[in-house]
Length: 436
Image 1 (cartoon, rainbow, N blue to C red):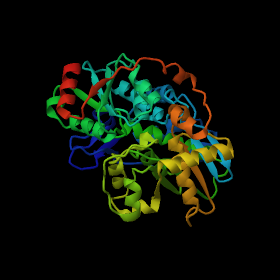
Image 2 (cartoon, helix red, strand yellow):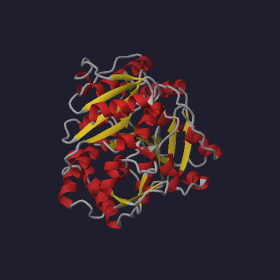
Image 3 (cartoon, rainbow, N blue to C red):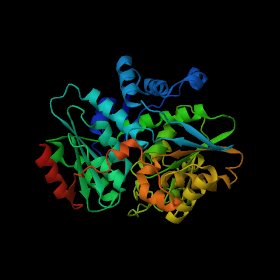
Image 4 (cartoon, rainbow, N blue to C red):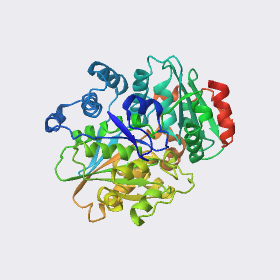
């Protein structure tokens, strides 16, 4: 498997280099030179396949024997060892639950797969690999859980102070071992900028082996494509138009869905569901892309003002607005609308969404009122367990919710994080002092 940079100014590389490097030297994003269409036989066999079987078939086609079959099976079986069930709410509305992994968020798919893949590619290296990751909420916990204890790899997680939920913060600050957390006195975009600057700084890259676990790393996106196939497999009927409503921040999840569509999955289109950080819906409506500082909301993992994966979307659509609009429609919603929808779905169906899933449901409901949305089936991605947002969710529905065991186990643990201003010199000095 060969990959190129979206900026076109870096050499084409093999999968191993792309995964371990994270970002190309020209500050673009790695993309596969070739996204294959899966054989007809795959889709014929899909109804009887397991999620790991799907992952193996997808990777086998993408990687083109770059990883031996036995190792590929081991990587996928070790990473994807939890389900992604589809729940039917009504005749045309389904919810894809992506919170059954260790950190109770969809990021577990990408983080665990990446940890196994990086461990495989890094197995003969003497020098440790330092993973830098910025998180607006769920990524940090998933990466911490996926990488803790992996030999030869150190992980440094940056998160915005006061802008993740208390339980999300515990998930990324209580592991110890090879996991370090930095609490940045700023926004997620500040955290993301620090990480990107580090990759372009020769003072660091000449002395440290750096990589990323954000969705800027192609290894995060590949396994996220698996559950689109698996969700499609679980639908009662696959006739007619099927749209996926994707709560979106950095847009890695939606990009992974587009990979699945390009590989032959019969998805009609995608609904880009955002909170008030609506840079992409505005672009889809007006054709103008204008990044802005992020605004804090209760759906905090989507508080992104400059989505990294927009550059991959541009690449997939040849930077053509009409191509975007042929595959995507976007909607954005306020916190008050999000709270109302969460309460409404709980009362109507007895189904409890988290704030991100509520944004996805809002977008699906609005899409159904359009001409495109008539007589369609919608799959709303529920990206995190509602208990991760216990305080907000309980105040919305007016009742207590039970914490899953994994959250009960960490809620009283001591947080360990290094407080730091959003200043690159401070960050680079820290990295050199800690890892050099």
